[in-house]
Amino acid sequence: MATEKPSVLIIGGLGYIGRFLALHIQSHGLASEVRLVDKVLPQLAWLAPEFDEACSADRFIQADATREQALARIFDRTDGKAWNYVFNCGGETRYSQEDEVYRLRSKELSLAVGRESAKRKVKCFVELSTGMVYKPDSNASKEGDKLKPWSKIAVFKLEAEQELAKIEGSCPARLNLVIVRLPHVYGPYASQWVATALCMARVYQHLEQEMKWLWTENLRTNTAHIDDVTRALWDVAKWYNAGKANWDDREMGKTPTFNVVDKGKTTQGVMANLIGEIFKIETGFQGQIVSTFARLNMDSVVDDVNDEVLGPWADLLADAGITRPGPLTPFMEKELLKDTDLSMDGTRLETVVGFEYQKPKITKELLEEVIESYKRMKWWP
Image (cartoon, rainbow, N blue to C red):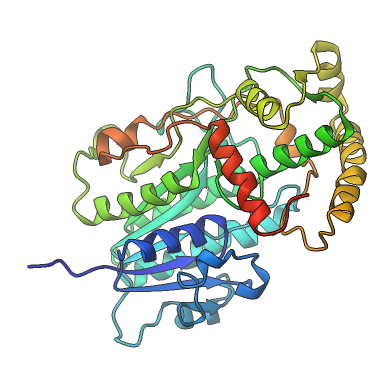
C-alpha cells in the first residue's frame, strides 16, 4: 500500500533556502500539500522563472509569523488536520542589524512557530540554525562540541535552539524538534557570502588589480551547496518521522542536531584560487602587518574596502544597462570579515541518517553555474 505523502509548511518560504526547498519538494512530488509563508510578496522576492510553480500564489500566504494573530491563518488547513512537517527557514539573515531586530525576527519567530507546532502536534519541526554557534577550534566542530556564537545572527539562533529544546521536552505540548546547522550556503541565485566574493572579483577584474584577502589562506569558510541542503532538510524530517533510527539520546542528546556541510573543507585559499581561475585575476593575502591593523581598526578597513569597490560596481552596472541587479552587491559586511573559522564536521548526517552529499566540494564549475544564473536574471555586468 502506498504511503500517504506528508503535508508541508515552510516558514520563510520565499527566502533563499525556503524557495529551493519548495522547488525540491515540488519537482520530486514529495508532498500532498505545501504552504509557503513569508512577509515578502513573491513579486518582490527576485524569484527566477523555475520557481513559478513551486512558489505559486495558491501555495503562498503573506504573513508575519511573529504576530500571534497571524498564527491561525498560517497553520489552519481546510481539512482541519495538522501539518506533518514544518520547516522554519525564516529569520533575519542580514548582517550588522540591531540586537532587537534579531531578537524579534529570528528568535521570537522561531519560538512562535515552534510553540504553535507543538500545540498542533506537528510530526516534525525542523529549525535552521548556523555553524557560527560553535566555538572555533583547530578541529572541525561536531554537533556536541563547545558553543560560543561569534556573530549576532548566531547569538540569537542559539538562544532560539535552546528555548525550542525546552518546548521539546514539555508535555502535553511537546515539540518534535530537529536542529540543522548550516555553513555558507551557495548555489544559483545566491545573494550572500559567495555572491559578495564574486561581485568583488568582478570589480577587481574590471580594475585590472589583484584581489587581496585579509588574514590567511588557511582561514576556514566551510560551504554547502543549496541542492544538498534542501535534500538534507527533507531527509532529516523523513528520518525523524520514521522513528529516528540510529539515534541515541544518552550519547547524542535529546534534540537531534545535524551539521549540513560539504566535505571540501573550504578555506579562503580554496576560494581565492577558484576566483583567480574564473576571473583570470591575481589573488593573494594581505600579510601580517595589514591584518593586525585590520583587527584593531575593522570599521575603517571595511569602509575603505567598500569605498574601493562600490563605485566601480555601479559603473559596471551602468555600462551594462542593468538597472535592477537583484540582490547582488560587493558591499562587505564587517561580520563577514572576522578572523574566525567557520569549520564544521558533517559526518553525523551521513552515519545516522544515511545522507550522501552529491556536491561534496565547491568547484570552479559550480561557481560558474552561480554566475550563469545571475546572467540569466540580467543581474550580472
